[in-house]
Amino acid sequence: MGKVIAVANQKGGVGKTTTSINLSACLGLKKKKVLLIDTDPQSNATSGLGVENKNIEFSSYDVIVDGVDIKKAIIKTDYENLYICAGSLDLAGADIELSGKDNREYMLKKQIEPVRDEFDFIIIDCPPSLGLITLNAFAACDSVIMPIQCEYYALEGLSQLTKTIKTVKKTINKRLMIEGVLLTMFDRRTNLSVQVVEEVRKYFSSTVFKTLIPRNVRLSEAPSFGMPVIVYDKNSAGAESYTKLAAEIIRKNK
Image 1 (tube, rainbow, N blue to C red):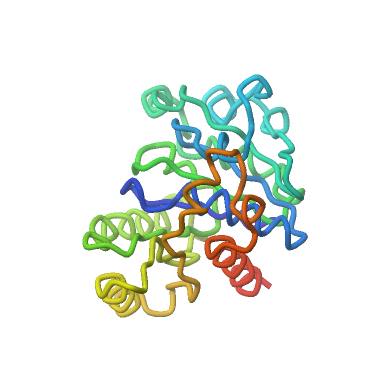
Image 2: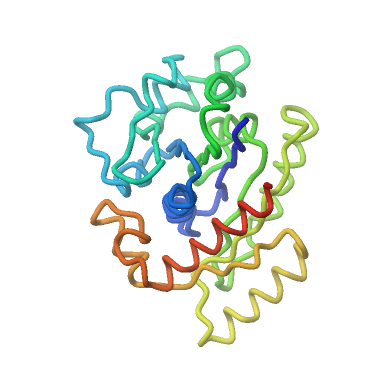
């Protein structure tokens, strides 16, 4: 069965979607069949892979809230071994719509289970909140990648996220683990970035990925062209770092 990994942090702007897109694409290039599920109302993972609205019949909103079979929502992207269940602006109101449903935390899990054995990895791009959509992702996944930017407030909110993960593990999903803490927007020229790396590694120890994701212009440009950075500029520092991250995750999950 495929490994299901959520990419989550309730703090915005830490590189969740960038990681979801580029990790998925790099795993695909390493001959792993990957499904990316975009559960963020902004749907940046969807547009970042060049998927247009006219090609979307059903979104993750339809799958989670209305119970549409996920197989009907899966779209093959232009990239090797990479499929997507697209996001939708409708997800903005999904927490309210789910709140009155029975087993509301398990809607996504129920949909993913029948297709798990069709993929090597299923990556869930979570919204920047700890609401019911993120809770659905935590109930459905095996592990969580927590991106942290190498900036002053890096650890802010992480204690809340780790507390939520522990609570979910006790009550909803006993197999839930932290896949790793991912340091993003690293700039080796600044003392602050180096200090944040040291601090996070001291705090989280062996759960921190060895791979650091640098600040990189190509990483920022690629989504506007609807491409993962490995396709937009395979020789860039961003492409190299996400290729290393994909290799690190494959080794970890052998």
